[in-house]
Amino acid sequence: MTNPVKSGIDLLAPKTDAHAHVGYFGSWCDVGATADEMVALMADYGIKRTIISYPDDAVTLDAAAKYPNQLIPLTWINPGLGASEIARLDRLTVNKAVAGIKFHPLFNSYTADDSCVDPVMAIAVKRDLPVFIHSGHPPFSLPWSIGQLAERFPQARIVMVHMGHGHGVYIQAALAMAKKYPNIWLETSGMPMHTKIKEAYETVGPDRIFWGSDFPFHHYAVEILRSEVSGLQPAGLRALFYENVNKFLGF
View 1 (cartoon, one colour):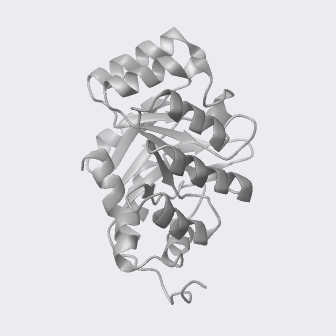
View 2 (cartoon, rainbow, N blue to C red):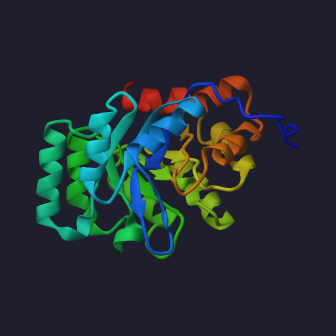
């Protein structure tokens, strides 16, 4: 049994959002947010920093330039584009213009363990840049593929975004892969099972799980409440919401 649902969300407790987006996503998604909209809502929910990405890096970098203390950019890399994308990554990361790398295998149609990913991972290891990888959708972004990538690059720091997402089998696989490979961290956004947050904290490690929102695809209130009712004690919630990802990124 987990604890009873709380009467309200602790809006002002400090949080760092490990996964969100600026910009507009069209087609079936039809969601979006500007940097101004994001930062205004962050204040309402006690979110001090947000790690952001978008398929067009210009949108992300402009947002981070406007709010440098609140919005932390990742570069969205499509390794299937080959040498030109690797060169762009090299330019961005040599000057430390971004805090890490975002892979979205589903969006860009490649598997997480495809050989096209290897040149990007080599740069990530060389520059000690974390890699955030979307997970939870077949055939491109399954937890097992991310596990195989972690095995090939044991020095890389890999964040499995959504920790398997909405399918129970994939959620359990995310936990299994993170248990097996110590270079995998888990992020909670969009993962519906509140109990798995506490399970990950206790079995993967108390410092290897991060809270995220996936805003604007999900609402801050929903993502916060799921973690609040997970059964974690206050120290665990502080680690989940704030301390773990800050330490991971060196804040």
